[in-house]
Length: 351
Image (spheres, rainbow, N blue to C red):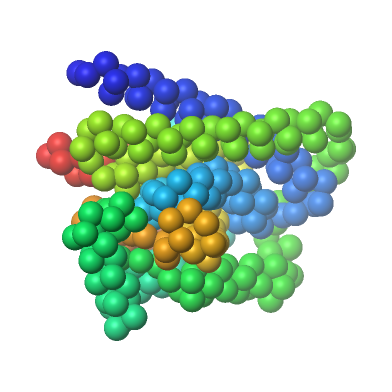
């Protein structure tokens, strides 16, 4: 293997390590804030922890559009969503052996998850005349050798990004306003001894700095590695970047499994996926024309349209099947974990 490839892999791993450590400290600080505010576990999972654990994806997305490689954003979002369910939930189920689901996912998060997938598909695939005109414009840039059009096959417009953000506002409204009493009734009693400490604020700031530095260099070395391996940026984003930015969710989930707090695990996974789809994709898409390559948020090549998004749809169907009986066993954990291995293998055309 070429020396430059090995060097870029090593530097990417170091950047991911800084990102993961920073995110871990940042999540710890946000969790303490949630405890101080007496937020119920499931709501903490879908709001405070979901935002905290998805913060690396969001910062990575901003650096990507600033560097003119906005196709990394969609790869990171879809790859992270797949990893959250198949990798994180699978490993957590293997670790916990079995856990019981008491939260009504069928009438709550699952419809929202599937709805977010449909909305994502509609904004990503070039279905309308406006989408097609954007597609043809960028394809024309590609034919002329313009770097701004390189690798682009579809775009997400500012209006579509605004719709995604509106979806997240409605999601928060659904849980925090309309169903406040139901959430409170099902919440596990939160410890009252939580106290604010200066160390919490210190590690929150340190974690934020680690996320910013790690995200910046993660994007830089991911682009270089993709060029070395002659693969699309969205492929590296859906694998290495998505894996690294999903580690905070894994840490939180394993920690919650040790305490038998399975509601927090599910809230973290579903909340992170919904946040990724609506905010991590929507906010950078809204701001993309203001800086970076000054074009709408770009979608990568065939991997996103014909592998990643369809596989994410299949992932949600698998998730629906395994949680319908209100339990998740170790065997089911192994099945969904193997499904993640299959995704990575297909992503790199290994099988």
